[in-house]
Length: 201
Image (cartoon, rainbow, N blue to C red; front, side, top):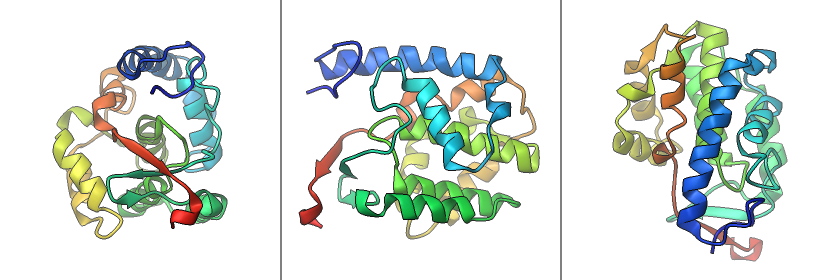
């Protein structure tokens, strides 16, 4: 079953196609309108506004914290009971060096604050921090998708691998739309979320 959506699409594959098309168009707008420059890099408020901008035409929950516990395979993202505390802690994390920024990105990924669309929103959020603090962004065309997903899966235990993958892809082309748009590619994101009840913890 497809997630409840504003498009009244009931087929999961059809929804995924429409979602990718619409979110890419909105991501392009996000870049061209300079809306990103108005956001405070590294805050949950910024991430929430990015998510809302990308997905508001598709989902009622755009920009709002998820109300379900979600897992990918055997990995459970932060349970809803702890999300607000976890978000407060991530906001307080330093972001003045590359290592600090990636550590913050990894922690936000562990939270996975939204029901859907976390990866795309958080990659834009990551680039926003890198751009502000280091005048660099990730050239996602230089990042192997399989290596990236595996490294992200392992990152809660050991983040050296994801740091190395992303460090090699750094570029100073911070105003290049093509570089930016590569990060919106939906194939970089996790598929196959499952939900679970709190008592299953």
